[in-house]
Length: 521
Image (cartoon, rainbow, N blue to C red; front, top):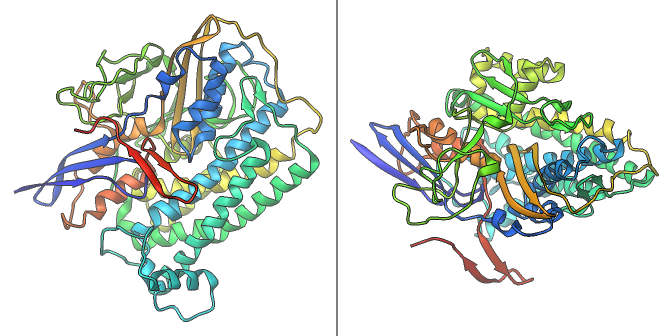
């Protein structure tokens, strides 16, 4: 007997994602992942000054705008011919702004988005101690307003009451830590979200000794939280939910564009980066070199005019909401025709295989607790563990990088504006590989395409009949209760999907003035 499970929308993610699963005898046989909002920012850029891309493309997302601004700047570096002459200050400032954004995003994802799948916040309802965070949550629950903790699927909460209370207290503290990371981003980025200092040619910030000290102090506080809360909480969840090391295994093929530049080689495939670039399979853990010419996007089952699998330089964004058999506003990116997962797990596997001693030590330590091999990292818990390890790794590196800044030295290059050229930006958002491709004629944008991490992970089936990574991760999953399919939302949230395309207009008081939905029947 088969049943269809529809989760629409999946809550506690960024944007509007719909999940459908056909379950036979308690096991998912088919799955569909559907992005339900149209983006179209690429079309807004046509005919504009290319430099607008570093500002406008950040509006794709309020959580990882820095990644879009930075990746747009990489593409513009090539367009304006300055991709090989970025100054040391410019390169370091970009790393610091992006790195601080990584920290806030990873902390947000675990505590505010994913942890409530495992942590029962109602454990704070009868708390009688003096912890101010727990008392705030207790008072919050007593008022009868449980949002943002609900809606949720019920059951399968395995932590003890004390473990739940500890995690709830960290949930509250994580809000302060995210604010702190935002403040660190804004020191050199000007503001957050949507920084103003990353531009083509480098970064306009002029660091001072006071700013360097302030950034260093904030990162130290974040490291203390990562060491004493984030990493221990991920391990605590892993010990109680160790079966999730065998749930949510995806396509098994991973890709990282690499991130955090260590030099300014004009060729992004040769540039030295703190987190390495390449492709890797979970079975052999062998790195393969990235060839960007093998990246294509397919729109066979997407609500766009289908032109076959095309490279992003040749891609178009022409909506077709009435297209037969389509079920998503997300396209289906492929590397050499193959389904590929991106994200923190891809980056940590690449770093592990490349011999990063810190990553190898952290990964082997986690696996040793469960007497497991690296293969189990292709799972729900593997993705959470990779994200936490990366958060620690990046935070420690930020302390070193900020001390390399040279006050008074330039961070930006000049360049002519009236150019005809094209450029490619490859970097990593917290959620995974991010690419921007721009074609410029006579100083104006002719075409622009962004292939974002969630496009790689949450894309639909392609013209070859291959389901996307999230779809593959759900297929074969045992669902114990079709009315509480927490197994499926745990799988989806482990990818940290971001479909932030819903358009809301609110007053300063928070009143909804209107909501706009494109393409609904």
